[in-house]
Image (cartoon, rainbow, N blue to C red):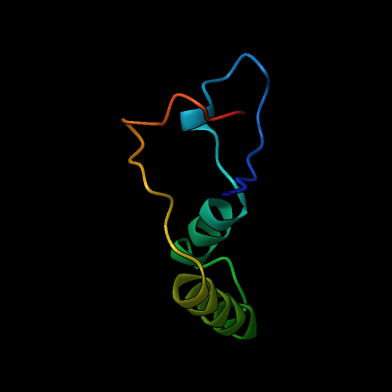
Length: 68
């Protein structure tokens, strides 16, 4: 089972909504995080990338039983 956290209106396409990882990465890329915050983000991303598998579908080919 995969749980996806995303924010948006019900009228928005779920594939175009962003979640906490996307938003934090945007802040990091824009240089809007303090150095200690960036260190934490990098460590958290590494942990999630190591511990959790990626969902078994691409953004273009979502399974028919997906719920949003």
